[in-house]
Image (cartoon, rainbow, N blue to C red; front, top):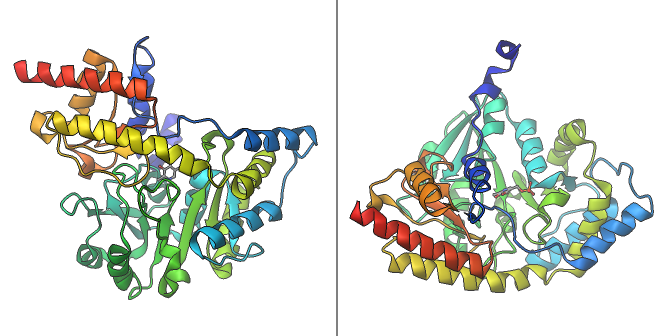
Length: 387
Ligand SMILES: Cc1ncc(COP(=O)(O)O)c(C=O)c1O
């Protein structure tokens, strides 16, 4: 029956992140630096809210857009943190993680032949859905502009087939954030064209040293903007599967139709836990950030000492050093490092071809593991010179 499978599904490759994560598990002393989730636990009060929901038999479906109480919590969170106003009644949908939101948005707006512009290198979760819709991902190369999108290059890529642009800042995999000035320039291009803007700001709470600016704060593009967010990264809740989409009412009515047909609603106990996270654990990301900054600085400095070129990240929990000086492809580098030193990193090529020449290191790991991993990378680099 395999020949009856949708050809577009066959085209999709298993994300490179998973391949190395699975392989490192075979080594008893393996260190996994591929992890895309916080190494912290969900806060106790949040876990308790989820447990209590189950004990009180709050285990059924919710409204398709999510519990009103959670939508209100989301609305208050964005109002307080970012001065953004979204009506919990009509402008917020609770989804199965940010991924569920991305899927529903893309399937709501895309049809055969559409183009979607993505900054690259970029998270691998968007391209497969674009492809399944019969649309095409068009990449805006950021490797020559320190991983910041060049507005004039963006303008050049926009044409009659362009349906949307996707941004993900703070960025997975580069850890870059955008300044207000950089965003002003990008928005001046976006506002001229009738295209959707999807801004995946899942790492907004993990921004270091400066406050995150949301694309939703630009009134001139609000009517065509989908803001994607969730508690996965901010509250160490990746397994609870709660995300949110925020957008104007007329667009949300359409997204809701698609979202309810694929998931009906997000898990109800998880929604209760998310209410507690947003209402009573807003300081949680800040506590994690203190550790992230310490680890980022440690790994960054060690890499620089070893001769890696690197743009120091200002958000998320990833470093994206260049490995071009080693003469290896990113896949070769990751494979050899894994086999020789039992350290798993993600080849940059997992984040589109524009990620070739880089590796992604996640520092969402203990300081002890990071120290060991860096010692092993040092040994690996010494052996590389000798051979
Ligand atoms: C940029 C980005 N967006 C979305 C997701 C998925 O988030 P969720 O677990 O809430 O579905 C990830 C996960 O790594 C991510 O890096």
